[in-house]
Image 1 (cartoon, helix red, strand yellow):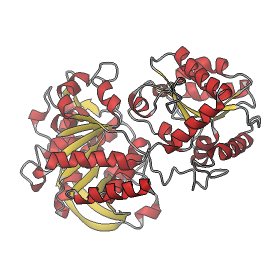
Image 2 (image 1 turned 135 degrees about the vertical axis):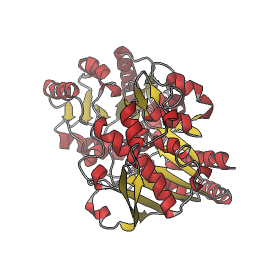
Image 3 (image 1 turned 180 degrees about the vertical axis):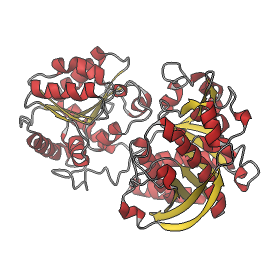
Image 4 (image 1 turned 90 degrees about the horizontal axis):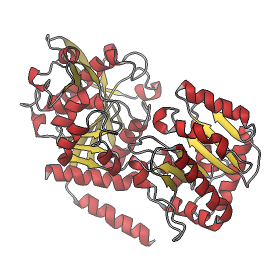
Length: 500
């Protein structure tokens, strides 16, 4: 009751702060289209900001792949022709609107750019597509006469928005808006030759210099341009904000980010605690909360073992891995030590798709350790929920991880994370301290297979020899606030700071 009162008072304070209008511009958003964590953020953060007294709009491409159940409920808001290319070539811009849960979603409609296939294909097609999208998003705001306080852009696909705003839109009403560019994954930057980006964007010559878009001798970098022209740069964890200013993590932009470090912030993502809630999750074998987690997790473990054809044994230590199977996720480390992990007390459950080398190696290990390794080379939402609930520990040994959501989901489900200390993993997982019985997971620092093995063995030692300590850690994890509420408050504070 005391906690509820505190939350109520805190929300009342938020509604006493000045209201701000914010437009999110990005290339994907759950449930319309999602390929990764960006889609989750574009869905969850605007909804939470709307609850915190912000006027929120989201602008997205109207991809052909958006399910018809959403498309049929979109309302036509208008259309116009927009000059785009350096030679004056123009394109149709349609605006279709969908209102849901306090957020207005406006979809930019153009079959030539968005009417085929998946949201991302290859740079030859994606560069023109997202040059068009960035300018069309700003043009649509002017057409609708919706002038926001903040324009919040996400990743390289929307990174030309701040560049357009300070150049071709400089003398429009939109010039009063402040811009934020959020980096979700710096590895993807929208780099292509200068003549192509110059033609498709129609931007003035002077932005193609080494301090803005130019990179190397003949390429333009859309992300770099957005970083230059935005008022604030954010990324999805404090540690990652520091890491990307170093050559190892900076993906060639570390010097540029160091130069702009004064406007760089890190804010950790949250998760949607309505979707990820073990007390109401109908996909689980047995729902549970912090009061009965110890008993109910055993039931979920038994159900998972039965479904996947594993040896059914409550005393097995079940390690889960829910991940894209790529080198970024540290799977080369895991591959190197699986034979040392797999003793008679351990089981491993993998779910994901990706590079052939990892898909094939996990298939091999499933065959080599029948009954104790299950490799699900696919993505299945139901199975993901059941792994989070049925596993004892979740593995996230990433080479780099801007934020990471799987460790947050794992904690929500009382599954102890074993992670590498990088990016958001470092910011959200406190290493277990055996002397004080504190912490909520097991970590290792350097990117080394032996250190990963050591972290797993430390987890197994606590699980088998100090079970009461393990059980308390499970409950600490479930008690941790991993919701969007705190993150959204930090973003709202940032909006107020920019527009005060």
